[in-house]
Image (cartoon, rainbow, N blue to C red; front, side):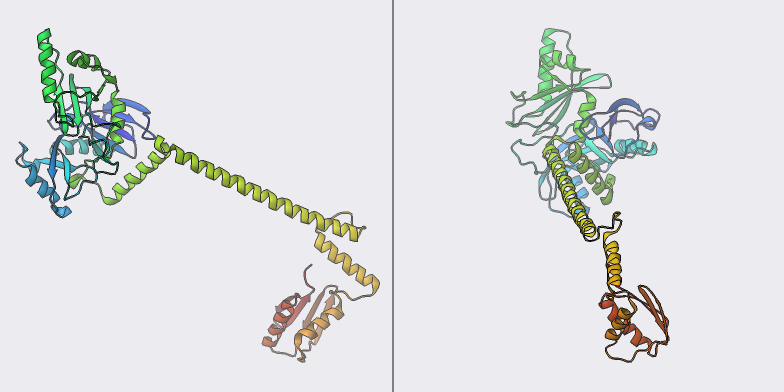
Length: 436
């Protein structure tokens, strides 16, 4: 996964030559592999490219969506937000929160369509088409809400409703982005030149923060304060607050882990592409996410048990087969002690039995008389008479039959059912004793 964001926010339309991106790559969506800053043409190649929009690029609005058809949803949003926005709604891009549907009260992300489309075109022209668009900050939800609720995804797990503050640098200026259950704000952090001015800076920043869950504008006891290392010192001096360091690549990674995707309406991907994204993301999460570690270990243990079981069963079957083969060899050598080298015990035993029968004067299955008797018995009293007989020990050939082809084939089938080996070729019937 390649995660990137414009290096400097500007409402002006970017050009390919001046467009620079801060980027981070992750192979498993859990850890950063590489980071950098470069033009679009120099970005690493990846199947999934996630564009993270700066906090100041997106505004947030809470609206109650009417129940309308999906093809009329964009028009409904324009009517609901027209009085709240200073720009012509036709020039803006709208996106609903994850799993937001008509008939619900949802958060709507709004940004300049021309500006966003320009960034997408620059990346597509460089051979890095964007597969997802996510915000760098978004409104949170009440922490006690179920995970499957709409908009339940967030960057941090909170035990109680609170506010996340993120101090970051942009265009040489330090900014404080704040996100709570009641909205998102982005405030410049300006250092004052005197002590009294410092108090005024804190008051100004606090006044612009979004309200907490209890409706108060002041920082709450359980607020989370995070800062990029490049602006952490400035943020701590301005606000007199201790910040936890979170580098920009790690922040981009956390943004990509959310469920948000602002590529909607006229900027949306095809249904097949969205399914492919969800499948690839699910596979990566299953392969690397800590929450799935017990399942991965369980599956690995199950596969290991199956392999051990199959190997044990194969070893047992092989041992049983070898024991039976050894018993056959012992039977052959005990019955015919003159056989010292055993290559094929059943065949050798059959041959020894034939020799024993011949030496005692008894008929064996390969004798001529035995073949004739088998043919006579199989004919069932029919007058099947060959005119030519060729015999070799264990093989009799009979041709010139006074019978039809159907009668000979019936004779062949009867002999085969009795275990004899029979070949029928034209008018010749070749009969051999049963295989040992």
